[in-house]
Length: 372
Image 1 (cartoon, rainbow, N blue to C red):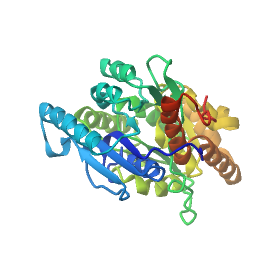
Image 2: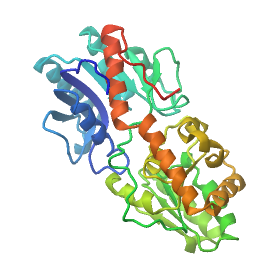
Image 3: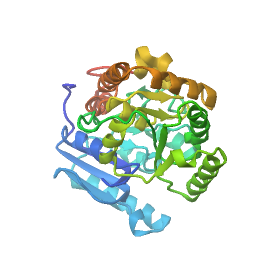
Image 4: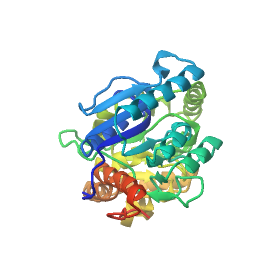
C-alpha cells in the first residue's frame, strides 16, 4: 500500500450509487476502498439506489431517481456541491465516468485549488469529455487504449477488481459443458460472433451449452437482444443457448466459478471489467481486445482471438475445451494472480490517491506499476 498522506475529505463524482445495480453496483466497492483510506467521502451522484457504504460516506444525489428534469438536476448539482464545499475543506476530487460533473464542477474546484482526477474508459470522444479533460488536473483509465483523447494528462492505472469477492468458489463444481459470456447486452459486445462460433462448435461437441448473462438497459439494447434471439433461432441453436437475466454483481462469482470458460468480445477501446472478474475467479477467459495482453501474460496467444472472427473464436474455444482440467485450472490460477498484481481494488485505490497527491505536491510517492 502506498504510504502517502491520506486526504481527510474526498469528493467523489459518481454516475450511479446503488449496491444492487447490475452494471454499476461495483462502484460501491470502490467507494468503500477509498473510504478505508479517507476520513470522510462525499459522493455526488447522478442517481442513487440502495446505499451500502460505511459511516464515513455521505451520498448526495442530483435526483435522477426521482425523475427530476435536467434543469432541476443542474441546479441541484451546484446547490449540493456548494453545500459540500462550505461544510469543510475538500482535499481532492475523484470523478468516476462522470465527465459531465467534471466539466460542470471543474471551474469551481479549480478556483478553490482542489485537484480533480477524472476516470474515463470508453472510446466515445465527446465535447463533454474534452471539457472534462481541460478542467481536470489528471485523467486516469484502465488500459492504454481505453482513453480516446490526448495523453498529456493521462495515467493508466488498471481496473479495480475486488479479488476478495471475485474468487474461485470452491464448493461450486465446474460444468465442463458450460461456456459463459457476462456483460451488458449492447451491440458493441459483439454477441453474434460468439453465437456463430458456438454453432460451429456444436457440430462436434453437441453437449455444450452457452449462457449469455446481462442486462438490456435501453430500448436499442432490447431490440439488440431480440435480434440475438432471432439469430440463435436461424442458426438452429436455441435449445443450447440461454439468455440469463442479470443478477446482482455479488452473485457473479458463482456464475464465473461454474463455467468451463468465459468469453469477452468487447473490442479495443474498452476496459471491460467482466473479463478481469472471470479471471479473478480462476477461469480461462478468451478476449478480443489486444489491450488485455499484459494481463493474459504467457497465455495471451492461447486466449486471444481477432475481433469479429467467428471461426477463430471457435478454434480457440475448441483448443481450450480440449485441454486437460489440470491445464485449465493452472491457467485460471495464473490469471487470478495477474489480476491481483495488476488490477486489484487496493492497487487501484492507492493509484487514485497517488494521482491526487501528485496534483497537490508534484511528487509521486510511487509510480503506478504493472500497467503499461
